[in-house]
Amino acid sequence: MKKIGIILLLIIVLPIGFLVFNEFGKLNETEKVLEETYKNQLEAILFSVNQYSDDIINSWANKVNELNVDDVLLRNFLKDNLSIESIFFLNSEKPESTVFIFNENISPSIDSIRLEIISTLSSNRNLISRLTQYQKAGYRKIEPLGVNDKNNFAVVVFSNQETDKNYSITGFLINPEVFARKVLLPRIQQIAQNRFTIVVKDNKDKIIASTDRTELTGEFEFEKQMWLIPDYKIGILFIGQTIQGLVRDRATNNMILIGILLLVLVAAVIFVYRAVKKELELAQLKADFVSNVSHELRTPLALISMFAETLELDRVKNDEKKKEYYSIITQEADRLGRIVNSILNFAKMEAGKRIFNFEYINLNEIVDKIYLTYSYHLQNKGFKFEKHLSEKLPEVKVDAEAISEAIINLIDNAVKYSSDVKEVILKTYSQNNYIIIEVSDKGIGIPPEYQKKIFDKFYRVSYGLVHNVKGTGIGLSLVKQIVDAHNGKVELESKPGVGSTFRIILQTDSHN
Ligand code: ADP
Image (cartoon, rainbow, N blue to C red):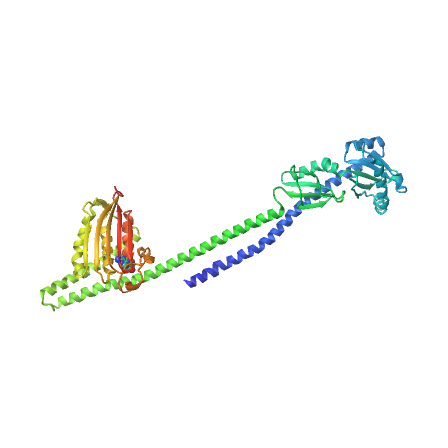
């Protein structure tokens, strides 16, 4: 058994344990990859939002190019685009002569803004000259010039081919809040659908536009700066879950699955171990059975042949003695017959081939008959053999032969497992809808831990005095099988050193 346990451990538990361990290791890696994938997905979304705002501002730049510094047209253009507070045309030679066209719908403190922009432009001469160079190379680039905190506007500038040479740089003053709500929000709503929440945050981390109607606060899972409005951010999160939450959930689910797998595996190994153990025990019991049966058969055979030989040689002159020898031969032949019969019956039962002939009968008749057959024999052996039969026993439908066999097996055991106090009592009585046949002895008794097992086939108690008693280990399993076939029960009450009572309990109306 130990060997089998070790083999099971080696070929099943170890590799699978290793696999599970490995899986746990991989789980972490997988979660990392997963997290990375989620992040990439979010990043791509934010990239597309940024791209979109870039496209919008680019389209404004195109439009302004087309409008060709026509004051009226530009004012109309501004009316249609409320997120632009002003368009300005920088005079690169003289920044202070920069031309501003303000959106009529907005009333910023125009003068201070004008001054601020002019100073910003002057301090960004490098950028301005770079834009001019780009333009010469035939490439227009829009560059942010930062966000003005006080008046809350963002400035972007780009080179403008169409305009006067002196005014080759054009700029927009954008109101980021209006831009986020009016321009970006419809687009991000389209992107977010119901899967994500996308927000735009200002440079103080305040959310100024959101696809989620509920109030949102705190850190966002994933945030990116807006390309053209620096310090403003776009944030995104999965609806109802954070990436970490999602990943954690997946990891937990996987761990639970692996845990269940492990449990099933352990249960399977225990099951296999138990099954193998049972089979091995059964094999051992079978081997014992063969040697026990041989022994059981040899004893009566030896007695029969010894007494028959003595009689044959006419060595016994005394008639009394002769009679005794004949009776011994008959008894031993009976015993032999019973052993062979019970083995045959057992084999039939095992093969499911035993046929029962049920008929209504008063069980007292069966017990009486058995009592008569055995009383002489038992009393000869020094046993007190008694029967207490209830007079009002209803009839039951049973196979008389099979029930007799069961009772005889119980009596046989009572005799075999009695030591000092030799007493076997038979009882019949009825209780409610049941009829009970009791066989009790004052023998060696059965320790509680064996009381269930003794009904198993081939099982014999290896405890105390039992060692010296011969048997095959199929007697009680036959009793149980017979009683089961009658839809009845066998009950046992036993105390080591005090005695045992076996009860066959049959239902009176079970076969009516
Ligand atoms: P066998 O008697 O041939 O060993 P059984 O199936 O009849 O096989 O009984 C199984 C075991 O139950 C016996 O080996 C014995 O240990 C125990 N047993 C059965 N009947 C009694 C009894 N009346 N008193 C004590 N032990 C008993």
